[in-house]
Amino acid sequence: MSKQYSSVSPKDNAVLSVITEPEYKPKKRRYVRKDGSCHIDFRHVPEEWLLYVTDIFTTLVEIRWRVMFLTFALSYILSWLFFGILYWIIALANGDIKDPTNDPCVYEVRSFTAAFLFSLETQTTIGYGFRGMSENCMVAIIVVTVQDVISCFIDTFVIGIAVAKMASARKRAQTVGFSNTAVINLRDGFLCLCWRIGDFRRHHVVEGTARAQIIRTTMHTTGKVDMTYRDLKINQSEIILTTPATVFHRIEAGSPLYSMGLEDLRKEDFELVMSFTYTDDSSGILHQTRTSYMPDEIYWGQLFQDMLLVNRKYYKVDYSMFHHTAKVLVPEVSAEEFDRKKLIKPSPRGTPLHTPRPSPRPSPRPSPRPSPRPSPLSPRSNFQDQHLKPPTVTVELVNGNVTEAEMVSSRTTTNEKQQHHDTLSPTTTFTEDSL
Image (cartoon, helix red, strand yellow):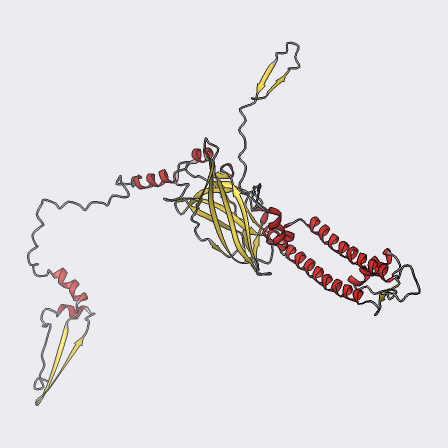
């Protein structure tokens, strides 16, 4: 039922006005929160407590710090108290409390308080030198030995869990982040879904792999809920995250977003889950960072702003622009319709781009007849050829049976030689007698 609110105007002739809220639509809960944690609550797990106790190390690593400190403090205090009770019982059985002159099992242990202090000093190896073991009771010696061994196990367990908890992948995952929103824009003529990944630490990751999935939840009338998962193909999924990188998915045939336009995207009910699995170069531990985007967190026609500047000494990364976007011109149609329009878009000459240009039709007119043999050169053309093709003079020397020929090329440059060109044959033969 919609809520109603009434407001009264301050004028004298006030009219009662009723403002009605629009119909409330329940907000869909996330499958994966923005910080990467899963929004899941397990119920009626069989033998749940037994599973936690069986894998006690993982259980203590996953619990909160305050719970872990309380658990470790109780483990020490309870162990001191337990062995203190044993020492007090041994002192009572040996008569050390009633008879001060008796040879004691533990020196200066005459009460429960003294027995507890002796247990604490033994397990923590304080050794004040006031209380100590004697050789009179073998049982007390065995109890001290068992306490020392248990003390070593407790110390090792506490230190190992504390180190594992400090080196947890969840803490390192908080230093690798995703952009608050995803964007859709054009890249190389294709609609692409893009998001940004960045490492906020100076010690960067060794290598990483990006992955994306679309999760849809379908609820049937019977109350049954089905969840479907579809992977998105990522171009260049292998990333060396030295600087913030923009990961993109090309929306093409086979993509779950191929038939979605801007209006369809706003009506869709799905969750886009992103993950980035990488290895830390400092610890060598495998980590994973996750986040999710709802349809209203995917901005159509937006582009991430540049945050990388090149200096003479180094590359400067401005993380204040990590989440900032800018509007760009992008068609508000689906990628399927956008590709169809690209195929049928006419060329500037009116020919479709996908239709090959036909070859020109042969002309019905016959080809022209070859020109007749050129006429002799005119004096003007003969004069031009003189400059282009100089005459050639051949000299032959006959000496007995030996004939020597030499081709001499010379170019006539003076006007006198040009006038006598007609009287001189292009090729003149000289013999030895004439010379």
